[in-house]
Length: 358
Ligand code: F6P
Image (cartoon, rainbow, N blue to C red; front, side, top):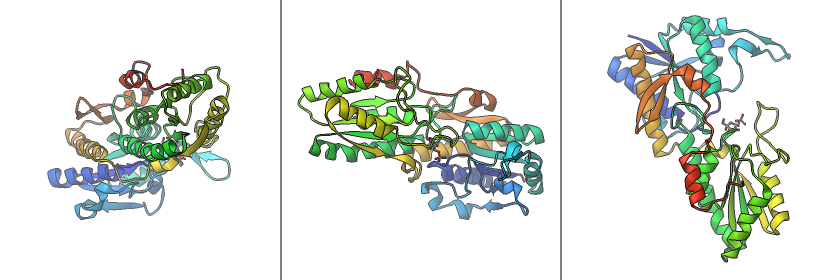
């Protein structure tokens, strides 16, 4: 009768609860094991008494599959090896976290996170010899060795819905609508949403843009008799010569948001078009998971428990070729997956005449 700990770590996204639900189902129904939910990443393991919740089947059935966010809570802060004490100093509190894990008598740990969280959790697991399995989640979809991470499809869906709503108002007013989307240093959300949402221009961090190229596309659109355009801008785009505003999210130093208005102003100057800017922000993280995210989350949750049953640790569940499998965790952490020049969606975008700003 094993006791499996489960936690969510890093930025939330849609589908986290669906992973937890699936793991509880597999653990209880197939193996007769119990699943213990740990609060707010590793924060709950630092508290005394340890902050946890036994996740029963009755608790996770029903709404959990459709619920955005994470019922366990999460955090970007509180790295146990360099824990910010609030007075400007940091302390190694990893032994306290490990102590919390031991106090609960856990046999293994499932961590649902991104590369940053996995690096920390892996270090903890190695230090304390905790059998660990990772489940990838991030709306940015920038984790290596998996085609998709939980949360990406929902975020794309939200951005496409925004474009569906922007198009009629753009057409009615003959405006250029700029939609700024998240993604950190990866342009996956912008590229996928821009194609699916009928954008004329998609700017991503991996391809340096020039306003002249963007303006040329808008003039070309006008020459066909259409007087509006849709422009999707990823939050960390850069200009060709490195100038202009780059407002990537860098660990809290530069706040997310703002590049969209900068680009909107430049388009207006260069083309005389009336522009309006929408910054989608955290709306991309908070909705109920899409059907595809529910499927992927469910497959990941079941497989993570199976890996524990098989004694396969230090691995991450992954998605490719229409199914779930697993990869070495260390390799997944090391392999950041940004949009590559030969990404099939780049070819699709160019084939559709979408300008990528280059
Ligand atoms: O990594 C996920 C993400 O949503 C990025 O797309 C975005 O830049 C960042 O997190 C926002 O972080 P926060 O929730 O801390 O504002």
